[in-house]
Image (cartoon, rainbow, N blue to C red):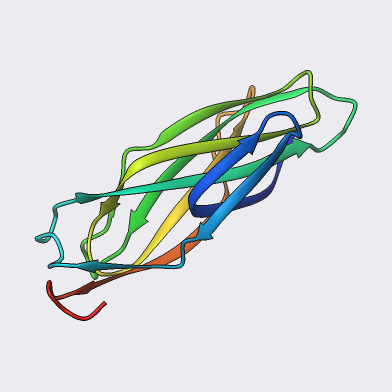
Length: 149
């Protein structure tokens, strides 16, 4: 089986293929947008590079494992609850005991002011259920355009 080690929501990630390492830059905790929130029920995007990076491993080192990870962003705005379309990535730990997954985005979806979550789910091969393995909160704040930065 596959186990989740960690997930980070950051502005940028860079993989060094020679050293097999990853560098994560600017973990996102709060995003300030100069403008007005999108009207209720609407999702808008702002151009902003960001990454959701997760690290996975086998629960039993000698047993190969496969599964699928599903990422999406969730917003609960006082009855205006919404999610983005899910992004799925296959994890294959047949050959290696550990692996990283990385969802790269050039646009950050905005659904309103307040708390948003990056939700990470895992479905093991030959299983029907998705297990929530991580919830990464971040806050979106809107300020009037022309305000001090």
